[in-house]
Length: 252
Ligand code: PEP
Image (tube, rainbow, N blue to C red; front, side):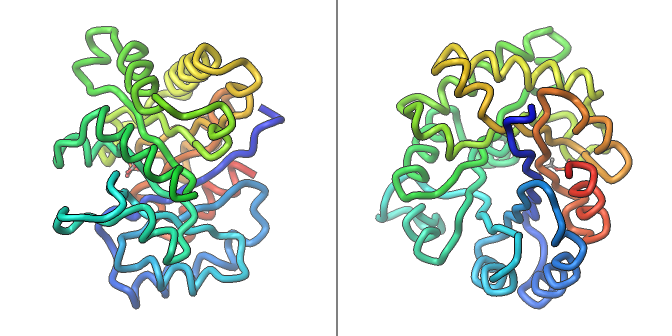
């Protein structure tokens, strides 16, 4: 764990107008400036330029919440990885469960999006996680392992330095139900095992694997204390500067 940097990333989802985004970032900057972990905010497309301008010269990095796999073309309402790169975006979330659940994204398109993001020079926060009924059937590790393997098909060992994996049990996202610290540690550890098999142990040990799912100021300490949990992907709590800062303090 000591060899890996913890990273706390906010996922704003479909929230905040530009003035609201600017105000939230300005409130956040002094609260997170001494963070001893990576700090990323992933914001709606319309807020990217605002967020990049507002975070200039700070320790906060900016990400988008998705990108398309094609370089350009007839894909109404989609945004390409090259477009994000040109705006100055550094990170992109790929495969968030809300994209998989509500917008029909599959492991195959997640893989294509990962490939496109890396080719454009973006860093990826790749989300994997099981549904409640999959956990109840006892197939959590198989599901997360399969999602990870397919998403990383064609990704080289050298490119793994640009991949963060977020383990996000779908039943814990936005529900207020958090996985226990042991559950989070167990699955993050299993995903690390998958990386070791796909690449090698050194790559697995160097890969940042976050937990996401109702992480907040109260439960962050326990979750982040686990050996395989290298940070968090934070939804709801990333929209309140003091809460986000408290999670960052717990990771530092
Ligand atoms: C997320 O959207 O990735 C997430 C973890 O949301 P929340 O923290 O609100 O559960």
